[in-house]
Image (cartoon, rainbow over all chains, first blue to last red):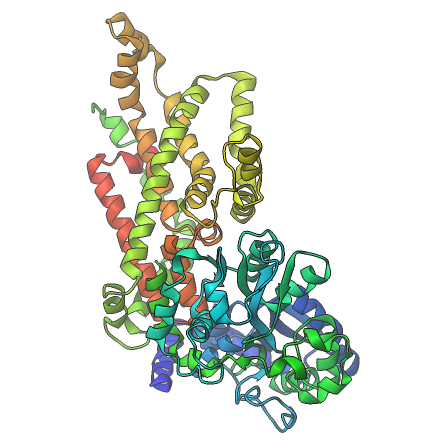
Length: 346
Length: 287
């Protein structure tokens, strides 16, 4: 069904963009011989700074190919692939988005002859994208508001007095609601949607639904809530800097960024080589030394400073405490569950 | 309302100059009408030919509720803008010299700052440890910080702040064109100032009101950043929902259908408004 809609869409577009398409298809063919630069779409910010240091600089030193970056706007990927007019050579996106894009046929299959997946954590190397890090959506609390007895699991988080914060999106929030209701962290999928909403009903009136990761950290640090779910990258630095916030990885939900290549992008070969290098143990270890997201390549773990490991979600002591978000579940069901969630939250 | 023939037909294009419109019309056709047509078509063909997307919108999902939220918020913002802007415009229309320049500057300068930054500024004002709460706590008016965010107060205040110039400017333009001797005539004929305002000035300022209301209401319907940043989930507006469908779920068919629905609703409200005001909303903007 998906392939069918894509072909009909393509036919539509063909007549639509005929003039433009002729003009652009000539270009990549000329550049293909030797790209002097590659365009990588990223989410910007601290992650991109880390990529620049750990991946871009060594890649350019090795190949002479310059790296330029731009924002990884989701809709742009779809528009580019539909119009066959490529701006990106590869992209870093949220893994759940990559799964969605893969399902819609927007991504190039990865060449696992070039990219080594033998040491990857189970479930992180997908046909069309590869997860590059492990972050955690977990319990955090304001240490001034919660002096003792911080919630040890989501059930306690649900019972905590005062206000709590959760993400205004169904991803991750639904999983957390199920764990709060007693579902085992390893038996979350397929999600029992009705049960999750019943669980969320219990706390709706005392929950502040935040929009962005930055907001989740801010309400925690300002004490606007007692407890909140957030991502470890958001509270790691504030905690070290002395902000009144603490967290743990019990029943954490692991989420990832992923590398992917737009379907039909012209510099596929170079993009695969870039991903292979970025996924190497050394690059992964270097990345985790800057950003508190753990590696997905298990060979990187022994190369990581023992002082850093306790802060990384995929380190030996933390990984067993949580479970991975099932990106394929969300790719297939996100739209419908999202609709229910929007209705519930209104 | 008495309207001269000239006022109803303020300007017509002479045939000799019609070609001047060619360039902007071609531009609009390529960069506005064509993409718009594609959006409308997409709502009917993606993911499958038919009315599936519209069935979802008009089904029991959250969509109608969000569209209604959007209309309600836009209407409230427009009403508040009008009430706040009218006296300001009234004073400004009578001001001369330096005062006029200062007032104009105070109204126009905020337009130079992006909507994103102004919305963030309101977050700083409204947050728990923000300026407003500090003030309220300091004055002893409240014991614990008031929770303004996320919420409808933030959305309304933020949107009114951003839209206010678009209400003030057409009002001023209109009021400056009102012949002051008419007011003097009314008073000479025995009207007190209140009556002179109500029965002479107010009706004459209706084209300005109509222009401002149309501009603010329709722009408000499409607001994205301010409700996304300051609003809670229950204040979701249509643009936020459309962005979610387009960007998060890559569900362009539904996003297109939602955008088309919003467009039709906007046009319907505008046409209704034109009828009620006898076309004044359309003609007044040009003055």
